[in-house]
Image: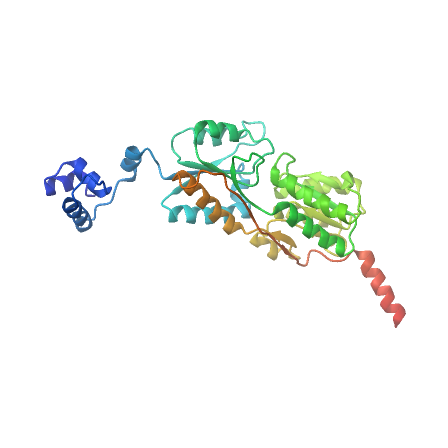
Length: 352
């Protein structure tokens, strides 16, 4: 049977409250008494009851993590890798994670996230997929619950951690343009999500800097899922067939894009190049391997927990805004447009 505070109090002939204060390092307890209590705890293998500790301190040592709606939250490799890093870091600081998945559009949205935050079961919250006008911010501020977003938010008083979405997208799309592509389609995420907005901005900036007009006919919105990418790509192909490259605003949508292109009889990259964003491990196992913008997913998970733990412990009350570098990762899914390849072949034939 597990030793209790009362067992220790009986052995030492002390009150239960004195034993509890001694273990907590209370200065009101004499050093000799504290030493006896700590020594006995080690000898009999006493371990504090976390539930009892939580009742005493009004803390649960649990972090709520608000993830996208199921099944995306469990099937998207980005979130699996992010959750692994966040969970390991939380454990390192003595916290557990409690996940809350959003409902699909039209069924309450973020209600479950707010119910968890208001349940007194968590000491702080990590929130994902921030929207341009995110209703969770004001609600959480009124609750006075520490929280940090994965992704940039516009409110300067809110802490967040994000990859370099706009610059990363602009750099990668510029690489497509350098290869000779000018008709580059874009498959965005939901228009009200800040990550989708920032990556589309990068795409637009790259086109503008190259003097290429933005054509809305080759821009379609997905939902950051493989099915969303597939359906958005099919919608573009129904009206436009002269594209030579596609930038999908995350890797999972890029997988759907690749399927839609193949169903249309188009080869990758000979007919159409495909570029993604996130750098999930599965990207390199696609056929051909997916060119992408690699985010430091593990670092995102570690950093966001560290910032939240500091806030929960009152060590840093100022909002933290942290942008982590991303890296363009070229691969076999991108190549010069086919007309450039044919032109080069003609030149070589003529030279011979």
